[in-house]
Image 1 (cartoon, rainbow, N blue to C red):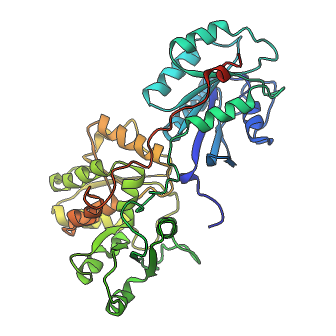
Image 2 (image 1 turned 45 degrees about the vertical axis):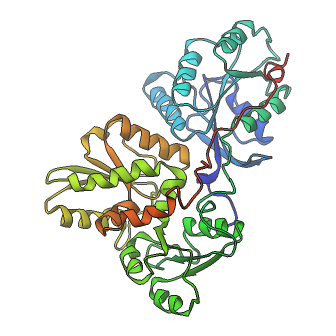
Image 3 (image 1 turned 90 degrees about the vertical axis):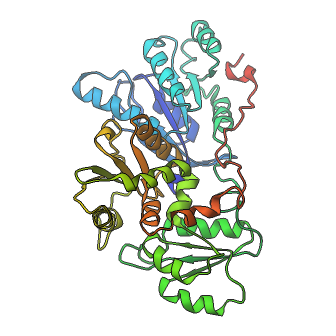
Length: 424
């Protein structure tokens, strides 16, 4: 892979009312003409993304959004799309100016704070007016970081960039990563993945690539094989591997061939832990036993590619569940960004894919929404493990006795001096 996937980049949203300079601020931050700038309100109609490297933070995605005060039927749709950006934002820069500060900004800030997303306010266009006392007092009273900026003169841009760096979640590319707290130097990790019809042509799947790199970062040894070669390679090893990681669709076959003392899990389970809340997903898998005829299940797929062959989401899981439940379950599908946040109560259970194409913030948003609506949620790998009586085994590697308890996504402590924030 030549570029960091968006799912592993820090997502930084720029939000605010129309014509406060959001697009100009994006261009100033990225030092590029990433967004179209115009004096006419409403130039940005859909979120505009710009990927880049922000040293020392690393790979990021800046997201320019439509104004939250847009009017009319189409305008309301634009506002809704802008607010949806919060579901996958790691940091939000609320942009305002002296002449426009008011209820819209305060309401937006309250929404962001309720979501526990790191927040920065950029008081823009100070080249036109720098009388920001009213705004500054409100922000200081509410303990919100802010900075005065001018996208035209570039005043405050370097300070804003530093605020973004200091506000980012720590450990986005931590040395723990996927299995870094489990493996030791020179451990052998055996990876089993079928090169089936859904495998990308000429390359490995993203989770496979990520796991190989994570093992190498910890001086462990990786061996990637097809499931048809598992028996042969196990017979050639002097010592069994420290852990076997396989694709979910071959879990049962792999479990039959490896020693009971060898750690076993799937790529899907690893991603559930790395990006989401593994314990919540485990609890969701245990609710599979409560499914009955007439229940509705939502299959949530992060990818938007059309299903091919024996697709797990559209074919394998529905067949497996209907067979085990012994009755007709109604399955509905959603893909990409089209997650049914406001309509989950209709379902008995949500089964999510591994979410390799989503960032952690979006998967957490989906999980939290399910919890708020009291709907169980799990993922593909845990579902397959449950029906193969292997649930306990595939989560065993992540018990406290086998791994560290450090979260790779703990909040970063903001270190920026408060005198920088207001450009005093």
